[in-house]
Image (cartoon, rainbow, N blue to C red; front, side, top):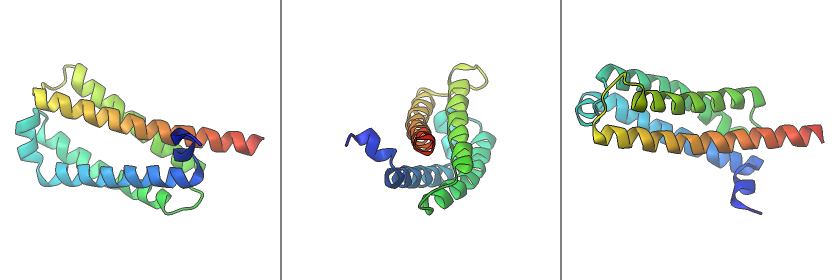
Length: 137
């Protein structure tokens, strides 16, 4: 079985959801506890970092609750996937939209955030499609 098949299986999806919840928790704590310091280092507004930290706490609650379920709700998993793709889009807007002027470290931070979240979103999306295909078959 390939790594992708393993990670998009029901048991693998739970691991991906845990990884999403844990990484989201770490980012939320970082954004909430160190918003002012991060703002200076990354060139991102303090308010944006604080707001994203609060938003991430809600997101983590959903990801964690889905990770605890042996068969997470497809609808809620879909919400999670949309949230992840929205996060990636927000990283791109912040990086290229001219809305803010991130420092080189801030640009790297946005790229790493975007890529990591894109990988999680894609694995979750593939697991959701795989589940739907199995239900139809």
